[in-house]
Image (cartoon, rainbow, N blue to C red; front, side, top):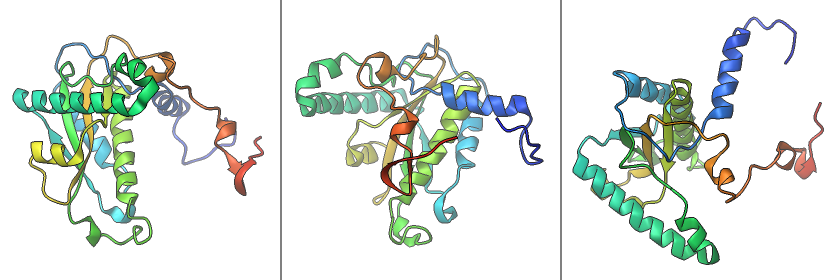
Length: 223
């Protein structure tokens, strides 16, 4: 880390805290019982709402699933999609079915996160890349994840669902798009590495594999 004094930088301990939250954030699937503390969920959503968005469109919406029957319905649908995913994986189907891919029934809170309807009205920053609304919402979800991790709470992004069916289940308007079932809650411990890496499904690539200079596949020169 640079020794040059930057008046805009956080204090050293604060900087380390930010990098630790990034480094130790995990997509959690295993939860233990117990509610969140009063105000915690609201803090995490406020952190998400502080995320950047293209054209300041703020396309994210959060639906807290408070009805146990609705939570169970979402769980059933996700499990149906899990089976279909296994079928699509072919040779890795059995291996995939051994993985825990959601914690909907065990976690303290379930949120359905969606993109707003009438998104075509937002042109600023999206004229040639309309998918930037999804990119913006992803930044919001990363903020949520990091805030939760800093407070010792796990969060898991579940994406195994049919958007139309989940939209109907949650009474979302036509034109809106669900992008995540977010499981949030206490954990016994955080994984020492991403769960899929621990399960040997895949592994994180080195930075040298993903950083180029001037043109694709031209390795970057690093200090």
